Image (cartoon, rainbow, N blue to C red; front, top):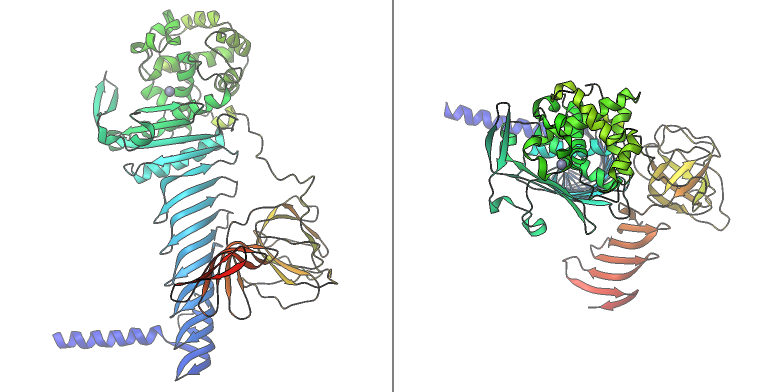
Amino acid sequence: MKNLIIVIHILLTLLLVGCADKGVYVGEKKDGKRHGQGKFKWSDGDKYVGEFKDGKQDGQGTYTHSDGRKYVGEWKDGKKHGYGTLTYLNGEKYYGEFKDGKRNGQGTLTKPNGDKYVGEFKDGKQDGQGTYTHSDGRKYVGEWKDGYKTGQGTFYTSFGFNFKYNIHSSLPKDWVNEFYLIMNNLDKVIPLMPTNSFSSLDIYTWTCKSYLQQVEHTLQLTKCIDSSTDKPFKNKIGNTTGTSFFGRATGSFMVLEIPADEFKYNRIYRYSLIPHEYFHAFQFSLSNNFFFDIKWLAEGAAASFESLYTQQYYNKNHFKWAQNHVNIAVINNPKIFESYDESIEEDRTYSSSVFMVLALVKELKKLDITEEKAFKLIFNDFRRKNPSNDNWKKVFQEVFNITLEDFYLSLKNYTNDINSVLPSESLKLENIFPPPPPPPKSDTSSPVVKGSGYTSSNASATSNLFVLKEVTSEFSVGDIITFGDSKKEYEIREAKVLKKSESGNIQGIVLYKGFEFKISPGSGNIQGIVIKGAVGFKISPGMKVSVVKETDVEEPVRLVSPNGDVYVGEVMSGEPHGQGTLTLSSGNKYEGEFKDGIPWNGTLFVKNGNIFGKFVNGEWIKN
Ligand SMILES: [Zn+2]
């Protein structure tokens, strides 16, 4: 029996080996093995066209997987290795380094929705430093691990505000993902607009050991157990704990310390504290006078916003369940809620302050103001008028058209029950806040005419690669261009000067289908450009292509010389310029700065990694 299993095992092994290599080969051979240029088609449908060495893919080659993926690039020992472009069936595209068959090293990943990641990869996943740019301009620059953000990074909003995240590893992964989502939502609904003194906010968040505290009969509170081990950012924010926002000229920061029990009991507070503290940052951005601290207006607004958020995004009425401890003082002594100190007991979970804000909305509605507009007046317009602790009553009357005294008197018509003032559940935050002005765009009325050219008569609608003839000046990677009179902007992904001549200027564009950059040389001053998102774009012959915005090169350009030297790095006018690495066909390597194609300041390494010498201001100095 044992022998039979061994025999079957051997047979299976042989069978598998046989299958893995089954296929049809057409091409050069050496010693009976595939060697040199060839084509191989596997029985499972995979295809490879390119160089082989000792029976394996090695050198330049194109591999078409039967699942629709296509790889164009370098191979070593039968595996993707070196630089290459991998295109997925869903339109995703990766350009960059491969090692042992996987994305490893520096690379650029573009998604069909326009999102882009530029940075480090490890074993096929985003890992290391990287920048993720959303199609709407939002950007995350930071550290990645195993395909996820580690929580150390900066989120740049489309309006130019930036949040520096310090998210501690003690937080559950699903909370961290939700945190990113909430920050995105908030940026869309009430974006923080950068001001001269407030354009950046540090956020520190972690979880603390906690205990559950029974308060009255409905609400349970969790509290952090004060412990020095629970302060992971002590070196940056000292002993600050709890949840708070600090608006300061020397640097604003937000602290979100979340009791572990909040996760254990899945309480909505673990999320709602984010919009609450964010709202305080929003208040800070609206007014020069943050020291306005009339409590029911400051906290009542933040806590109401918090509940409107949970109502809209989680379908949970936080007003009813957490802010239902309205004290009778809202009716007979509302003035105490102007002060933090005088109303600690009467304003548990800010229920009474929230009640007063919601009652003010009701009173404004009586003046024929819509509910959305009423919230906008309280959340936005009042703050915009820079109320101070001295003049706020006057500002109150100006903005709401009611005197404070009259408002306090009107509260006598209410009962201290949150249910009597609840806002409508269909209210949407995006209808409260006015749409912000569009983010600054390149000024197309006076374009930066750095480069321009014309498309040719055989221009096609299905290509994303154009060869421009009659190029009056150079195009560079990252430049934003437009076609004809269209305002639609495209980004150049690759640019290459194909041939320069004195006579130059022949009009035309060559269609190229595929991903390789290979165009037979024509006459004249021709430049090829690859345009992101331009597949299917309709162009008419003779259409003008102009640069409307010059952008820095974000990804390495790769140039290959006829003798096999490979350059990866910054480029200007088609030549190495800036930082880059030149790997010579001999295996020697130069790393450093280039100037107009010439090694300028850098080091030359021989194949074994030893330093051979260096360039200083273009001058060669042997080691
Ligand atoms: Zn608050």
